[in-house]
Length: 196
Ligand SMILES: CC(C)(COP(=O)(O)OP(=O)(O)OC[C@H]1O[C@@H](n2cnc3c(N)ncnc32)[C@H](O)[C@@H]1OP(=O)(O)O)[C@@H](O)C(=O)NCCC(=O)NCCS
Image 1 (cartoon, rainbow, N blue to C red):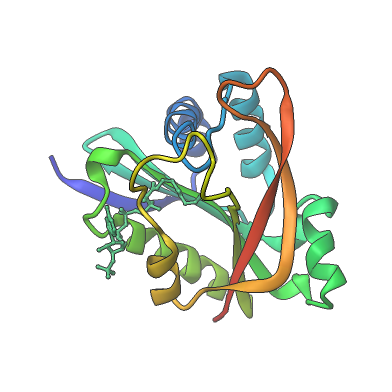
Image 2 (cartoon, protein in one colour):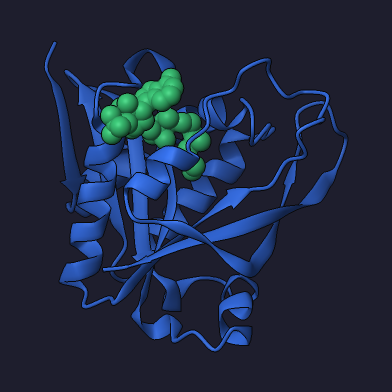
């Protein structure tokens, strides 16, 4: 099968992808370090909301017709106020920042360069929108967390090689239910950024 990576722009095609994207996000984010206990109902609403955001970019990787990976990006100006607040407090002009929501790829397809193509496509979307900087968040987990695998893949060298760096002191929080927990909890998130 041929792997394709493309940006979905057609509204109907984007909406039709929601069930596959929900399943993909739940499956990949269940693993370390996100340990996310997702539900298809929440995912469907989250993705529909993302697709309504003006300027949102949805990139999908497909093996034949099957969606095996996805990445999202959208203007920081459209993010929730609590997510913008840490940037505002740092005096950053979030009007010119493009935010990368997630990139998820089935394990069997990792290590083949698709992650690079996701960054290429999202940075292209950011440039096309006139953004000056791009940003994403990564969860902060303690090294001694009981669910940390023996030798997890460290994405930091990849992100640094793409020109990103964690911004000292620029952190936020995001609530979700961890695998094995009964309720949602707040998770510290580190912002990573680069100039375009
Ligand atoms: C993030 C993700 C999409 C990257 O996808 P990917 O297709 O595996 O990435 P690539 O193949 O383009 O590889 C990127 C770099 O990581 C390296 N790499 C790939 N697999 C690796 C592994 N198992 N261990 C260490 N490095 C690895 C590659 O060699 C490449 O480095 P290079 O440019 O020096 O060659 C994928 O790892 C993923 O879905 N992770 C789980 C979800 C997640 O944490 N997402 C990020 C936060 S939202």
